[in-house]
Structures are given as structure tokens and as C-alpha cells.
Image (cartoon, rainbow, N blue to C red):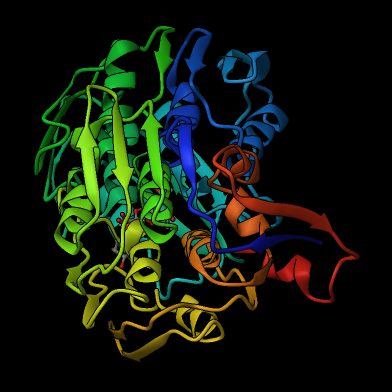
Amino acid sequence: MEKYIIKGGKKLSGEVVISGAKNAVVAILPAVILSDEPCVIENIPGISDVTITLQIMSEMGAKIRMINKTTVEIDPRGLMNLPIPYDKAKRMRATTYFLGTLLGRFHSAHVSMPGGCNLGDRPIDQHLKCFAALGTTCELEGGMIHLSADRLIGNQIFFDKNSVGATINGIMAAVKAEGLTIIENAAKEPHVVDLANCLNSMGADIIGAGTDVIKIRGVKSLHGTTYSVIPDQIEAGTYMAVAAATKGDILIKNVIPKHLEPITNKLLKIGVKVEQFDDAVRVVGGEGYVGTSIKTHPHPGFPTDMQPQLSAVLACANGTSMITESIFDNRFRYVDELRRMGANISVEGRVAVIEGVERLKGAPMRATDLRAGAALIVAALGAEGTSEIYDIFHIERGYENMEIKLKALGADIEKIDEPEEPGEESRKAI
Ligand code: EPZ
């Protein structure tokens, strides 16, 4: 079992290059299944979610060839519509995207229900509503979702809840359906737009991605493409939080500043300096941040995936901060861990009230999910003394070479491998 050991209190400075976006690539790779020709996907991050996705596709018969560390060629022509069982699906929620892509190509799909989740209830009713609207029947049996459709026929779909996953699955199921599909109350996240752009580069006919209404005119077939994944908005935001928490000076390169606006605005508001360039932001931390309120919201609001990391910064801001988590019903599990460092945070349902303290002190902690783990790293880097962070497999799902990138910024961080703890395997299910 691997853990990080972090000696905090150093001002981090220098440059960090952001990798391809996890939440875009876990959609774009399965989307290649819809193509009648090989595709080349560039700027893929070296994270375990990518490894798991490519492994699943390879075991289904796709030919996978890594052209270099960040570029993969996928030939989906030999892929068979095999079931994706729980033991494969449990490690990554994004296996739900195989529902949309396999349905879109084969008019059927057999994928395990996504496992339990550390963020609270995460139903997929909107995904299933979308598939049904296109003419699909859905059966749940033994924890597996079985989809089948004689024909997929375009339709008008209104999502009762703004859902990234349901929007992405709806697009993938509709791109080769007969006729026009209109998705209303669609998610507008950058990774939704990236998927639509990738599919359009394969010959799909999708307009409106990034707005509330997405129109998809079904096409008969999709051809190959060479497509580069956008930079990761949340990885970039996490390094912005690192600069703030360590009062450092970090140039964060290979970003799309527009995607970072909600994070930049919050950091500016509390007193962090942020300078924007064409494809980079420079973040300079300092003393005496001012507490603030944050309410997470679908894009272009403040991203829920940055809520834990900003809370770790606000733990040492002056005054009171209020964090309202409006997307998930249990995204404060990291708070118990921050309390071990001396943070003064009370949680009531979906609201956390943070009373800023002078300094956090290093402590042993456990990552409970991907972004909670990132928050513990942010806090440990800014804290006095040494911290140990366990269950870092959560973090490595979405951050490429994090300890290497942090070391290059001057962090005192080591990754240590220890004998597996009892129950660790089951904790790997998300
Ligand atoms: C995506 O999850 C991201 N994951 C999450 O990032 C992110 O937190 C989330 O979007 C919100 O931005 C990927 O892109 C792989 P949703 P997703 O469907 O699609 C409810 C990370 O750390 N809902 O937008 O599962 C749901 O319970 C991860 O990178 C329904 O009720 O999120 C939640 O409360 C964590 N019914 C809300 O909607 C549905 O059918 C938003 O969920 C679907 C969702």
C-alpha cells in the first residue's frame, strides 16, 4: 500500500505543466468505439482511470497501441460487445460511459451498475431516461444494466437534473441514432464540449455543446480522427490551490484560462494574486487570506471538484468561510481528516463552516476520494511539520505524477510503499 510523506511549510515555486483532462479522456476513449476506423487520441494523462479504460477496451477486442507516453491509437473494429462486470466497473464510475457508446454502436450494452460512491448518492436515472427516450429498453438484473434497442430514434430529452454523465451518455447514444435528438438542461462542462468536438471531428453532427441545449443529428457512420484532449481544469485548479496554501509563486502551464475563471475569481477574492496568459496562469500566494463563501454549481459556476482543495486553503484564512456543496450530498468526508491537522470546521448537511486558524499541523490522514486526497495534499504542503497520506490510489486516479510535479516545485514529498493494509482492496471500489 502506497502513501505520501509530506514535510510542509515550504513556499513552492517554479513551473508545472498540466496534463490532459481526466473527465474528458474517460469519455473520449470509449467514444472511439463508435468509429468505423482507427482513431489517435493525443494529450492523454498517465492516470489509472485511463489505464483501466484502455484495459477494458482491449479486453473487449479493440487494438490499443501507445504511440508515445501521451498518445494512443485505438482500432475499435474488432471490438466485441462483451459485458463489463462489477469487478472491472467498481474501480471507476466512468465505466457508465460504456453504456452510451456500446448502445450507440451495437444497439445493446451490458454494464455493471456503478459501485457505491464516496460522494453520496449518485443515481443514473437521467442516463436511463435518455436511453429510453431513444427507444431503448433497460433491465436491471444481478447488479448489471442490460440495454437493448431494435432502432435508436432521435427524440427530445429534458434532464430533470443537470448531469455531466447523463449528457455525455446521451450524446454518445444519439450520434448514430435516426434523426434529430435535442437534449435540454444539458451540462456545459468543458469536458462535455471536448467530447462533442472529438465526435464532430469523427463526422458526427452535434451543435450547442457548452450550452443548455445540444442538438445531435444522427449520422450513418463515424470515421477515424486524430484528436487532442483539453488540459485538465481541475488539476490546474489544484496547483493554483497549492500555490495559495504554500504562499508560493507557481506558473501553471498548458491551461485554458477561461475554464479556470470560477477558481481564479475565488482566489482573487480571498487575496491570492493570479495573472493570466494565453495558455498559462501565474499564481502568487501571500499572507492573510480573507475568508469567503463558496457555493458549488454546474459549469460555469464554481466546480464541485475544486471544493475540497479550496476548503483546505480557507482553513487558514482570516475569519469565517462558508462552503455550500450543492451537487453531491456527502462531499465533506475530508473534513474529519483536516480536523486532525487542527482545522476548525463544522459540517451541517451540505454546508461547512470554516473558522480560519493560524496554521495547520502535519498529521497522518487517509484520502477518501480523489479530490479529498488532493485537498489533504494542499493542506499538508502548507502545514507545519510532517503529514502521512494513506490510500493515495484515489489520488492517482486523476493526477498524473503528482509527487514528481510537486517535487519539481520544491515540495518535500516522498511516495512510500508499505505492506497492504486489511480492507484496502475494498476501499479501492469507488
Ligand atoms: C462528473 O460526475 C465528474 N466525473 C465528477 O468528477 C464531477 O464531480 C461531476 O461530474 C459534477 O461535475 C466524470 O466526469 C468522470 P453528474 P457525474 O451526473 O457525471 C445527480 C472527479 O473528482 N444525478 O453531473 O457522475 C448526481 O447524484 C469526479 O473528477 C442524478 O440524480 O456527475 C449528482 O448529485 C467526482 N441522476 C448530480 O446529479 C443521474 O442520472 C451531478 O452528477 C445523474 C446524476
